[in-house]
Image (cartoon, rainbow over all chains, first blue to last red; front, side):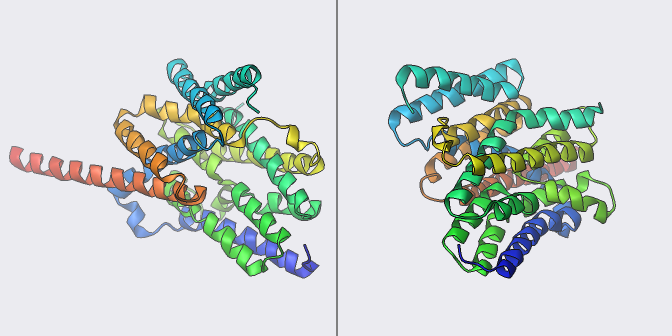
Length: 109
Length: 237
């Protein structure tokens, strides 16, 4: 890395401002269209959509088929446990617990 | 302790391993690329946007033009515009009081605040956001330094990062599935769409596509429902 101090300082300030603006802009001054009822209801569905985009692809990105199947089993078990026990936190507990057991038995990683 | 603060902190617990792990990975990547600890920590303190920071240190280690790095970080963070628009009416306060909340509104904090908003019990969302956001900020910054310092040992971490991310959020997905039956069809459709697309595009693009598809699906569904409701009322009259 061969930047001078001023460039680095400008870079950090620039990245900080850019990130902050994307978070603050519509949070403070939303476009008028956002105030419509069906738009607001549609925006309420965004968290569920985001969860799908975080859970589903990352379950299937393992490099080997064995690891992918184990990950699928772990994440599915986490889903079922969290659903049945009505505790979101149980999802990660069960998924990782199963992974530790599976990886020690199958020597996955 | 205030129930809203407790809600924020308890909501943060399941995602804490993911945040710590990601912070450590970020610190490790920065150290590997020859980025100084000062710059690495400064990015975690002031930018506070995990995926964008990873891109920034990777580009910086390749001596890319700084303006290009700033643009890349901005594009990766564009999804935050949707978060702000989604939550803007949940906070009835002066604009300048929203500024610190906006700084803390990462993916995880947005999610936790949105979920708290949808619950029957009424929470002070400002406190939920502050508690979960500060907990995440402190954890992420500590993890950054730890990851940087143990760079040579980090290859012993043997939980796949992808599994950690999926496991961190699967409980919240189950909660959505259980509580909001009307969203089950949308979740199923989006899951299939994710499976089709995830090898064809980047994670950031996929996130934007799926969020956009979820938004459109609900918009079209509700618009049709509202149109049908209007028709029914006219017939009754």
